[in-house]
Amino acid sequence: MADAILSLFLDQVKTIIDKAKKEVKLLVGVEEEVEKLERNLDLVLSVLAHAEEKKTTDELVKKWLDRLKEAAYDMEDALDEWKTSVELEVKGAENAANRQGKVTPFCNFLSCFSFRQLSSHRKVARSIKEINRRIDEIVKEKDKYQLESKKIELPKRPETSSFVDVSKLCGRDGVKRKILRYLLEGNSEEEAGKLIQTISIVGMGGLGKTALAQLVGNDPDVKKHFESVIWVCVSDSFNEKRVAKAIIQGLENLSGSAAYGLESDPLEVLLGRISKSIEGKKYLLVLDDVWADKGEMWDSLKVTFDLGAAGSRILVTTRDLQVASIMGSSDYQIIHLEKLGDEECWSILRDTAFRGKDKLKSREDLEEIGRKIAKRCKGLPLAAKVLGSLLRSRSTKGEWLSGASCTVYFSLKILSTRIMA
Image (tube, rainbow, N blue to C red; front, side, top):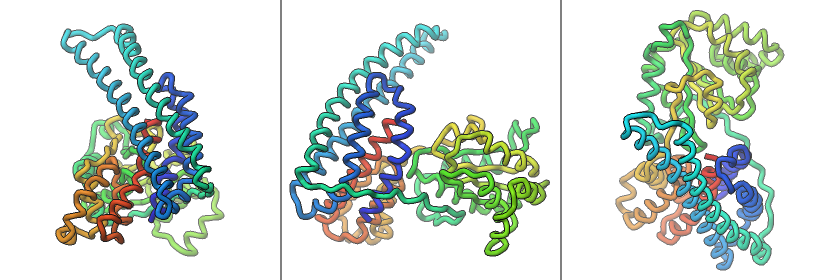
């Protein structure tokens, strides 16, 4: 299960580091420190698996991991401070303008905001520089503890399906109702002639976007409202032909040799087949885990979808807000999936570790530790689920405390996420 946690972390880092380079300009004065942090994280990642193995028999390695964890927590706090400061500055300027009963000249607002923002950035830059110094020392010590680099291949993104275990989704009832309203009710854009509406669920990895889409797609009202519900797992390799084949399989319930027969058909033939299948039909197309932000790839498919009946819908899940816009979602049709509360994370962790509340009653000594672990999940249901699975086979207080140390992976993941956010 430690491998599962490591895989979850590495899966996040794979995209986080790339996006950090593009968006790090938002942190004025921190560019060099973030580049340095990236290099240090690469070095840490290369030996992290070995360190996790050795910590059970080597007390010094355990302390090394603890120091790394503390540095990650401090980095998280520094970036939190920067983010909160900027949000308060923007809100304060807006409130001041409202109190005056007039709109603050943009140039005055920008000047004030930029000055205060620069001050905040300088402060966080100093904090990051100091934490980087600590991580530098930690990285240098890896050789002293004979920690070996282990090349870990990132797992391919798992294929998703439309099936869902409703019992495993927690804290999303309100969002589900909102999405159902967009799917089942008409709107002004529809009345204006825009037949096919696209709703996008946007959020970082681990928030449960796929599970939410599965829950919505399996709702009885949805199945009754739409003639066809098609599920396509797009993942990070958006390919028009592959997506078109998956849509045909969903529309025509193809499998086996019948599905294999689509392999030789060119894209134009596949699109023509989709057109005939959906023309005049009210459908829901779910495109799960969309990464590609190349509009021209999407446009060739979108023309075909417009042949469906009024009221048809496309539901997209993605980590990238730009993807949602390219796919055609208006601002009000973009659902920003938020993190869960600590209580909800504890509920997921508890139910996964104990398989329900009843078994916890006899182990109340573990609840306090469990709640602390749930808090470190920082609102990510996937993190709570993975940690709950890890703790399921551990029965003593000591084993749970040991399991809590695995949150170092999530701390580093959260740290990297804050850099790009």
